[in-house]
Image (cartoon, rainbow, N blue to C red; front, side, top):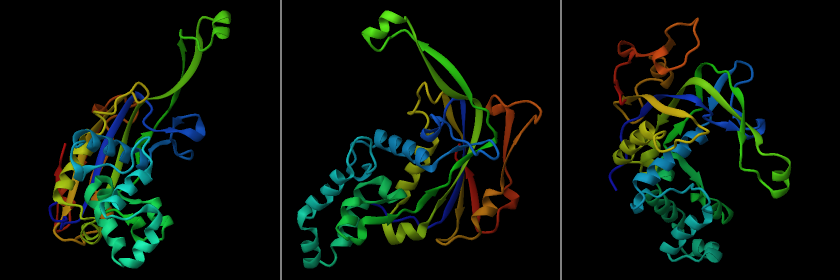
Length: 296
């Protein structure tokens, strides 16, 4: 593995959805998530991290150093067990092993960070180790995402759909079709902001330059391998990365985020495509010691 990153980063990316549901809310019948006071659409950080994990798992599935800890239908303690087996520790005897080796916490943490990309990146809470009172059970990752929010309020549409495949024989005698519903947003452009801490990368997970490059690649392509009828047409449109000259940064993050402006060209007409917006980066507003790059 390469050395941990030495520079702090912030980043902004824009993605849009056309005739789809970018992030359904299970507490509202899978309706697209919204801020009820303003009508702005919301996509959670968990949803976005899932797309990043899926992309990395797809392109690095044979690389032992780029495993994914949080996976669908895979119990977490199965991955936890791999670390214990590699260190020759029995799961039922963790407390005894810890007494015999005071550095066991750090060894397990290092193993998990070395072999799982999403732990090196986002951190994790590893339940098996937490229950055994191991300090390595909670790892704070250097990369953090906020919720994505739409640039303008969104107007979800509830569509009635039909299907000819009847569920049961009894229903087939009574009807030839069944009715259902789905929610879509005609169009929405979302903005997400994120942070990369070189200090946490150095002290905690060892998140490296190679990991950073893979992260940018995953963000840029996270919608390309995640298409479905429910999500409609989704695409990442912009990825703007701010790089500091130092580990601890040269300016507050909010000043950098304010340098990225996204506006609708015609406020009187509903947006229906990315071309209805302009995205600008004010490079003149960047503080000394910070550079910006448009990755897309």
